[in-house]
Image 1 (cartoon, rainbow over the protein chains, first blue to last red):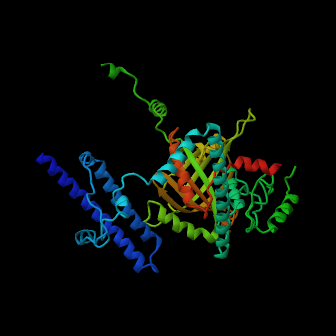
Image 2: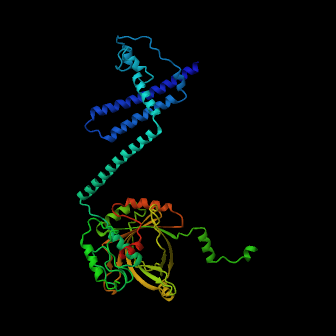
Length: 248
Length: 224
């Protein structure tokens, strides 16, 4: 018997500590909100929430542990309700609960949700359990559709916005597809590198004059040019095409 | 006793053994792109931040590459291409003889180009030897630029020059961009590295867009 009591004591002490931690964390958050509401930023605010949720997890861990059953077996029995101010109670609760009134007791000692809330929850549960599979599936697809639609809108908006900000910052394109293709083909097949061929004019992306065996390049639709590429490139290459000495 | 009587292990034996054990890095995983001259400094900066050899500064190189072809007179098949590379900035380094196979782009799910690649170091007699074999010079160019390392990945940022006929003329750049290549040499079947390369290439965006580029198809497109 004595051992059980001792264990209960220890458990209560642990829970009390946790609850006190939680209380100080909440107090700190409230103080922050009241005093720094002009300067507080989201990260610090969320940090505070993280601390709260950490304390809550710790508390529920203790309650779920082996020591809890002994608590569950105990009953709190309100012996007397009254409207008079109870100094001892007020001091214990730091002035929050001045008296054990009919108003407060049902809320303070509640172990189940409010009857109204419980009823609504049951209604919802019932509704969910009677829903047919097809209807549920349909609703899920509909929901997915809506979400993906929103996602599309957001990503499109972001792309536009990023493009705008890039242009606003005066960012020039840092690479062009034509140059990439010209370089890769030159290194791979020697286009524009073979001896005896006039060199391409610098400034034109692709080598205008092909190798003896190689056909002259043409910027077809499949070779995507950067949007900012000057239109002069195309005409230049066409001109080179016509004077090509090896064209068959 | 029996070991002493057995035939001595020849170089061919150990080579075929190595081939069988699949330890020869004969596959090249490759991504290519380019960066405009105006943006190359930014790219070098970013690479210096991302790569391993940061403290020593970027490694430079200045190579000349000559591409030889060997045709089979009886067959109409494509000529065999061999590449010889020599370092212009380090004359005492051996020549590099390289065979590169057909690039295999695979389908959309494959992150990089894969092509077979064999490298071997040779001495200066190599060009003469290839000439004697009947190889013909197809084209040559020089590449000058920077080289970075990230784990097994090699990143080169280089300018490609056309070598002019008269030695008095300076080499002409091919375009106003630098060629950027990200490559890894690995034994067959190590496809996981390709994913790493993709991830690395994504970090260079939007500065450079490294992609699978099939120059064969590009050449084809030009015909139509």
